[in-house]
Image (cartoon, rainbow, N blue to C red; front, side):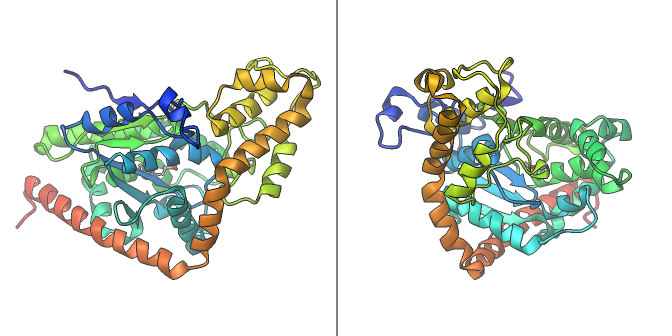
Length: 366
Ligand code: TRP
């Protein structure tokens, strides 16, 4: 049997989930989850994903990957989250308010339901052995392969700096993040798929050359449409068009109100002809766990003002409990640092072991 290189979780609630008080919003169907995490070796899968601490996590992250992470953890997968602090300097000179951002990420994870007693959260800079894996990995890829990586190209185009060695090679570094712990599944947004393909290639080439050491991980995609930001472009921190998880109700309403719509009063769902209106409908539907066409019908003549009101309410409703938990967590940075220290300890053990195996198969165990 050939194993596909990616699998997709469907977040439309099942009939049973819709009957629950929260309408099953944001949870993939239980049978799909079981299939996803058991399909690897007949044991619970090891799931790894990560974020670069360049700003606040936002709704795009929530729908693209955060809720998948929590659903996987709750279904019994072993969840590992890497905070990719070295990735911050791929396309910029300074690290910015790094400590605050890293602790903010930890608070976001915990507020979303990541349980640090079950899952591992660590910053990759704290795990030296992980970085050493990058050396043999670099020998397995050509510069042409790296230069055609779409994310590298995009980041280079957006940056005013010349291509740095780290930007060019960071997908290889990310392969070390992914491969060091025998990851089976990587829940990511579509933009990360080329990185995952590279990690698979590196695992395969290493195994061919030195013997079976690395597992080829698969992408776990979630079919939520690429949510557009409030300016109609892809939601991204660098564009300033996001709705941060930690924003207040009023800030959320204000940014949704700024979203561009069009001059047609009657609300319809037509992604190509009416991207602004349809993107808000997608957002509202994702938050409510319902269908954008249905919401469009319900709003109809209410026009853009009603659509924005409904979208902001959907977001605020979904995020309210999370925001309350996040505020409590942020008030206790010592506890957030402790989560990272424990996570780094666990990651170090795994990385040291993997590096020892690598050195052995490369005959470097003198
Ligand atoms: N490159 C990812 C991003 O920018 C973050 C990341 C780093 C990551 N290491 C990872 C994602 C490993 C998945 C797996 O969002």
